[in-house]
Image (cartoon, rainbow, N blue to C red):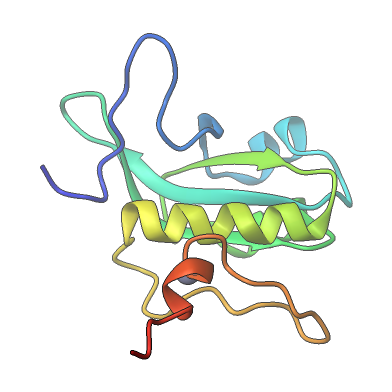
Length: 130
Ligand SMILES: [Zn+2]
């Protein structure tokens, strides 16, 4: 199975995000709260009804505006708001490692003036130097 395909089960989707929703202006305004941090995945639903992730990202302050910048680049989106910008960043990292989306060439960059670590990369950095 390709890694960028989300496996849907009756219980929950593997992204842990809401959606999918159609990536258009009106839907974004209806579903996404203004001026809140959040993480998102762009993609489409394949013939088997699975959501294929093509890009993941996060916004530290305004998820709604960020999603509008992506209109035209994907058919659908999923998202979730987070209470803090740090939680949104960590979710973006987890989505990146989980799906390796075709549109993400590089690992998510931590915000300037932060010392946040990716939750998935944190452990492998401590290499055994025996
Ligand atoms: Zn990482």
